[in-house]
Length: 331
Ligand code: UDP
Image (cartoon, rainbow, N blue to C red; front, side, top):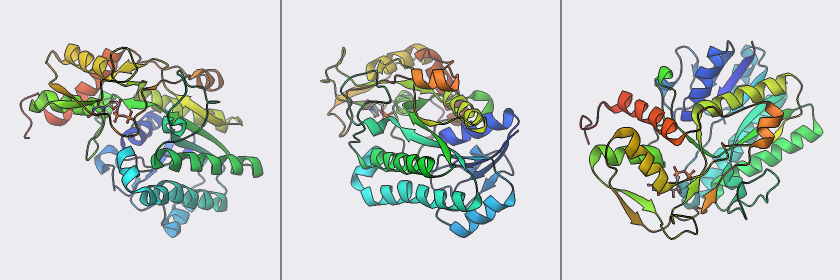
């Protein structure tokens, strides 16, 4: 049993990881300002609601028990918004993380798992992408995460601090028994928007069908959120066993196009997905697929839910839980 502080534990991936670690028997506290996440995502009695930059309260929380490690999810995640408001993204994501690191150093907490992103690679030259690929973000969101990775590297070089940064590809799906799922406001992610199109009859816009991919639409590596949660558990085990850490891709190694996701949603739900083609979305690379062999080798981790239909079925089960059967949702 380890004592773990999870920042951003009221958000989609953070809450799944919180539930996952509690079930493994760890002692977990959640820090979240609820600017994006939901209190109902956090198991009762675990939530501490304040901003990461509130150094006094953070120091108090860190002094409340001898934490073995921190998992740091808290961040803004909307790529388009980061292009419109770069200063706010850099201040929140990079600035907030640096404030956390300073407090951790003062409190003597030397182990951290960090939510990084495939956006650190920008527009990769080829896929699958190994960790050694060029790091060249094409938006402030990716840069805000890469700057934190750089800071983490320096701490690990200069002090006893050790970290694992997990570069997430496209997180999706849900774990039904936790009663939580993907729920962003506003929603920008493909799978929840596909379900919304099914429910409302309003077509979803597919961003671009003139990419250099087999069907012209973008290809992404969709990783089930339960597999991401288990990757965090493996990262913790690695660090707490004295592992060296570093940065790792977290994906399945399989790519699916937007149209393949839409067709899978039609198969799983038994309903047509109304869609239309629109222009490309700014900053969208044609294909992002992980080479996650380093994660698999070093952390002894394997993705378990890799069939696209299974991933989408788990997301659809949460959609039912949240909105009721199709047709029953007020729009
Ligand atoms: N996408 C789309 N229409 C939408 C939302 C997303 O065509 O309304 C596409 C998007 O261009 C990308 C893929 O779906 O190729 C996944 O996008 P999402 O926003 O879910 O995740 P991202 O890849 O930006 O992390």
